[in-house]
Image (cartoon, rainbow, N blue to C red):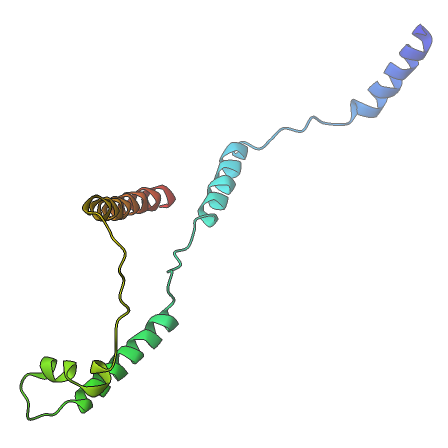
Amino acid sequence: MDKTDKELRELLDIAFHDAQLDAPSADFTDVVMNQIKASEEQVKFAYKPIISRNVLGVMGVLFVVLLIFLTFQLDSASSNWFSQTLSSKWISELTMPKFELPFSRILVYTIGTMGLLVMVQTTLLKGYFDKRLA
């Protein structure tokens, strides 16, 4: 076994005699870190609104059309346009459904408080996530 080990060692010495050891370049670490930073910058999230511009535009146009419709439905001689709008035929024919559920004061206050707390928490969480994603 010594003879085969010796022959193997001589063969390896001959094979690797001309081979040079590879060494990284002097700025290898800087190049790698710059690539990591560049990839981190590409990962940032883009802001996407919940309601797109197209939907907001359609809603704006519908609102303007409603205002124009109400303007032409009113009599220009009357100065009290609000009372005239409320006395219109099509508005007076609208009826609201009657809800006759008994609500206690405690229930109403609880629901109102919970709604207020949800709004506060949503505002705080939005600020937190905006800072975290920025």
